[in-house]
Structures are given as C-alpha cells and as structure tokens.
Amino acid sequence: MLKQAQRAYNFNAGPSALPLAVLEKAQQELVDFKGTGMSVMELSHRSAAYEQVHNQAIASLKELMGIPEEYHVLFLQGGASTQFAMIPMNFLPQGKKAGYVVTGSWSEKALKEAKMFGDTYTIASTKETNHNRIPKLDELAYEENTAYVHVTSNNTIFGTEWFTFPDTGDLPLIADMSSDILSHPIDASKFAMIYAGAQKNLGPSGVTVAIVRPDMLERANENVPTMLRYDTHVKNNSLYNTPPTFGIYMLGLVLEWAKEQGGLAGIEKMNREKAALIYDAIDQSEGFYKGHAEKDSRSLMNITFRLASEELEKEFLAEAKQAGFVGLNGHRSVGGCRASTYNAVPYETCKALSEFMINFQKKNA
Image (tube, rainbow, N blue to C red; front, side):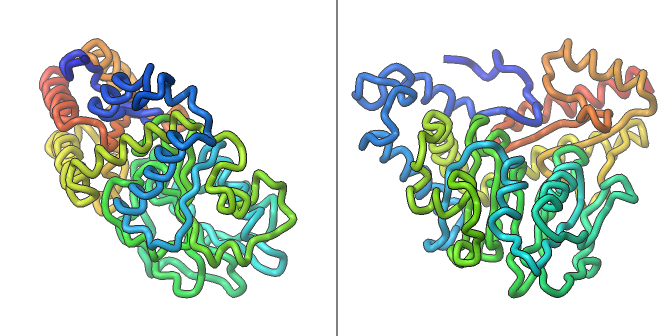
C-alpha cells in the first residue's frame, strides 16, 4: 500500500487528487471484483454485478447532496463541455432566450455554445475586473421570455466561487458545478439542473454527472439526435449505450469516502481549514503574494495568486516542483499560480504548501 509520505503534493486542477483510501480499495478489487473473477472494467454493463454499482452510485449521490427523490441522476460522457451544447439544444426553444452569468472562461464558453442554438443574453459579467469576483445578487437582471438562467458555481481559472445562489423564481436555474460539487452543502431543489465533470471532486475523468428536474424533460426539444437528448438517458438509466463503467465505479467509491468524512458538512469544514492555510499565507505576506479574487468571492477549491514579477513566479514554481509540489502553475490563459485544493487534497498537503510559501517569502522578500 502507498503511504501518504510517498504521495506527491498534488494541486492539479483536473484530473486531480483522489482519496488514497479510494485508490487502495480499487487496487484491492482491480483483478477480482466481489468474487466475479473479473475486473469491474471487464463486467458487462448489463450484468447484475455492475447494475448494483451503478444504482448505488446514484443513490449515494442523492443521499449526500440531498437531491429530491424525483430528480434524475444521469451518468454521461463528453465532459461538461458537451453539456454547454446539450443544454441549449434541449432547453432553448424558438421565441425564448437563455440568460448567462459570465464569471470566467468556462461560463464564456458555455455562452458561446448556446449562441449557436438560439437567442442569449448576458445577465451579468465580471469581465471588466478580470473575473476577480462573483456578482452581487442585486446586479442580476432577467429579461422576459427567459428559458433558463445559467451560472458556473466555481471558476477554476480565476479562483472565485458562488456561496449564495440567486433565487430565480419560476425561471429554471442551471449550474455547472464541475469544480465545487460535493465541496459544501447546497439546496439542490433550487436548481432545475446541475451538471459536473467528474475529474475534480467526483472521481476520475470520463464521467459527467447531470442532475435534472423532471419538468425540464417536458419542455425539451424533441428534434435532437438520440444521444444528445436527456430523455434518452433518463429512460435507460444512463445505460442506452455502454457507460464509462470503471469511472462510475470509482465515483461510487469516492461517494462512500465522502460519507465517511461526515458528509458535505464535514467536507466543507475540512475544505475551509485547508484553504485558510494558504489564504493566510497570502494575506500575511504584506503583498509578497497577491490573491486574484476579492475576499468575499474566494474559492475554496482554486486559490489563485501572483508574485511581484514573472521571474519570481518562475523561481517559486521551480523550487516548488523540486520540493514535490505538483500542479501549481496558473492556467495557461492567465499565468500566475494556482493551488487546487479539492476534497481529496489532504490537510497535510495544504499545510506543506503554506509552510513552503512562508519560507520562500523569507528567502526572497
């Protein structure tokens, strides 16, 4: 078994860290899953052994997130980026328009895809301040004939996160929660749809989770290719075609691990403690480190910061790499530094980074 001391200090933005206990469990069951004589990767997706894995993962997600019983939980493929197109294809009819709150690169991409299928508008945007904050709720203005409202709950590139979501009334609220799903409790009933790529907090890459309120299917466009229709996957329990079975198995193990951490309340407490270690190193550095996000918009999942010069940043990243830290480079589109502190990143890893930052400052201030 791997020891934590042998593991990298993994701050990758995605695919990202998985719980060590989950990796060890998968290792134990890799060759022979529950006496079947086969790996999960070899099981038929129509078999009883796999069906149990599949349905338990759905049940666990509903339990952890408090998802209303009538909502559909789907396991899809193509990442959240495919959802950018599927959502307007299904839910943006002629004569209506989709409203997007633009808070970063991924919401910009979601809006760009929606424009290909119908009328859209920007409810609010933080582009003028380089996406360093989440809009205040009173900045959001909805137009008539809005089909749905779309938000991106956490912005991995810029390091901002929604903690209070808008009350959109009768307007369906759709959220891309790819990078903060399961990180803190939410009221799932406020959303008509939630979707997320798995590779941050849910499991390995290859699975996309979609949580859909039933009434959304009633208004869905029927003139959409079969695999891009949500009702196709609802009717077939996400088994219309071969799903990413191993990824769903791993997702199920991550959900069981999350329950053992005290559920989402326990995970949020842990995440706040982890993030505080790094944010405190930034705040107490007297400007040596400069956080990108405004304090009331700071993400618990992606901590973004700069140093005084690009040369100093290169030196910081080079020394960090030598010390065993992985994934601290900022996104290629914005540069700087980023520590992604997803659920499975241990407290000790964040503490080690905090100490490294403090020591680096002492040497270079």
